[in-house]
Image 1: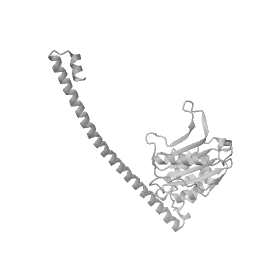
Image 2: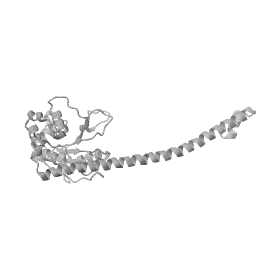
Image 3: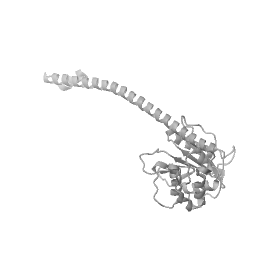
Image 4: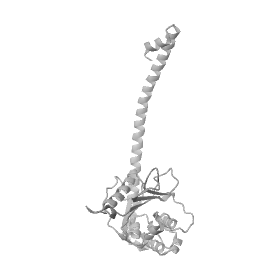
Length: 289
């Protein structure tokens, strides 16, 4: 029986999508919000740029960069652990790729669109049921008015549920979500086209050397370590926040108690003065209330 590796792993993801442009082309055409006339015909890989690392996270981000014949750029990232800094990192990467298209003095009309596709093995929008989030620059009052140039797509894999269709987007997400689970794979999707068959073949354990399999395991160890560190920092921050809130609550409670006590004393004094015949307005003036 064939055994399969998880394509979300750095080594496997880059083997499948970072070395076989025909597979990446099919993947992007399925996952990106492209009209029929916008579909990608061919791709060339670009050297990944060095971007600032998110504190703590070093191993949980895998990226592949490419460009099509029209000059459009595509940045694909596999993110194992969500942090709020990741959103800024994605925007930074896409924005820098857009700006760096021009040399000094060149005309802005030469700029081509940049697409950022982020595949998240985590949930970043728990209050939204959808797993596919498409962002672009539009006018708030008239969303049909768009400034073209940057588009970002986030896919929350844990929210994805297969519906049993043969649509390419669902098949690729099944490939990412199910392949490698218990060392198995949805092998039936290999019947849906050459790119699917090739992707499944590249995820087979037998396609990797012993050294590569050791690297595969080390990657998961690094991911687990980083998740543990992030969880620890979250617990530390939560504990600090609770302690701060408790101290603040005690201080506010004491202040509130003093304020309520003073108000009650003034009310009793006012009632006593009015009962003794002092006009209420005069009593209030004398008490300063």
